Length: 285
Image (tube, rainbow, N blue to C red; front, top):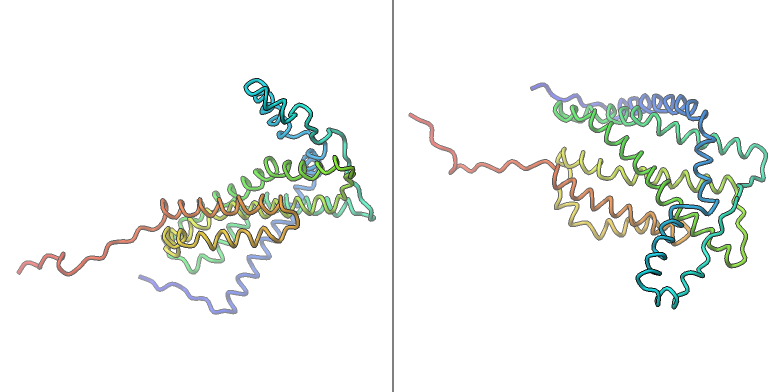
């Protein structure tokens, strides 16, 4: 069996630079493609500002059900008089020259990165491939496919499910006499940062799958560190100012860790039982 090639430290840095250059060029090309529909992305991100989200429909159905089944509770808690977020047009504002242009660049850059995610994950795989065995290198196509799909699912989960909740909660303070006046840079930066975070959160099961297949982690190791995972999730989420966003990040992050535990249990590398000397039959004379 041929020995695996071991690269010196400087060659690792040269290889890393090569992979990073390819990733940067891929992102620039993806950014050029995404520029054509960046305004559509901005319009989609702005939709929760109108106050009309899936939360309104869910709340209406729940209140109607309570009214039919429990009319006394409906009258007691005055659910029919509850004031939600007023549906109206709330345009974004900017206060600096070229601010919308730079915002469009940021949207195009993130969207372009998502478009070329297969290239980025493939370059990452090529960087770590010299340290893998020939059998392990065969996982390149499943890794690139699943990792790309996981990031996209996490990003869409945030935009469709979580983002309207955050904006709806923020707009609810208008009932206290406050007026929303969102700056386009603050609004988009906040959204893009959370898209990136949720995309990376959904990569945890993929990472657990790869590490468990390579025998670096196992089910028992991950399960025994649940409390540390919960603490780490809380610390990561605590970097965000408001309490709602903190829980919105902490809960999915810890749930992805729990899913990673089960992924390691189901797909992890099974240990080969050791064979004792007593089990070996003596050779025939």
